[in-house]
Length: 129
Image (cartoon, rainbow, N blue to C red; front, side, top):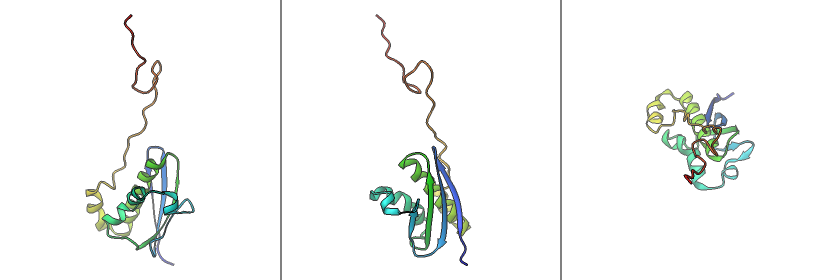
């Protein structure tokens, strides 16, 4: 049996479980083809970015299970998951992935709404008279 490498990535409220298996380069996200799940080319390129940095295009079959958040959050979670899984395949990739900031978890989240305000930082309009 060929070896599989799995990792988890998170961004905002999204979580992605990534499994890499040596293969032909097929990518499946939530049991749907990769190009169907992310329709635009720019979104697809963001998902492929860790592979391009690691020069590992078409070397692994990728199965991704993602949930929560929106498109941007899911892409960030998938990128981190793929980068972490690639690191398990070859530890020498650490420096190149680190230079592209692919191993750093983006900890920014939506700030909570405060009482007496319409949003987290926005104030209701002030009228002097």
